Image (cartoon, rainbow, N blue to C red; front, side, top):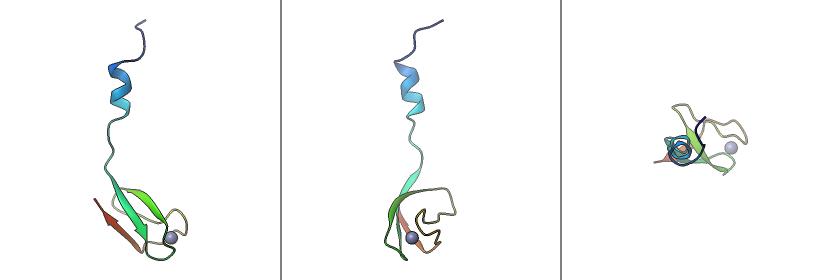
Length: 51
Ligand SMILES: [Zn+2]
């Protein structure tokens, strides 16, 4: 068994492609992932995103 820690921890932290999104319906700001982004608060697809 190897000791855990070091480089292995970094791999898990690999950046996902998240976008900063804002719901135009309720004003909720959240991080969006994927193509079809919906507001987690009101499930609206009326969302504006920026990279
Ligand atoms: Zn919303």
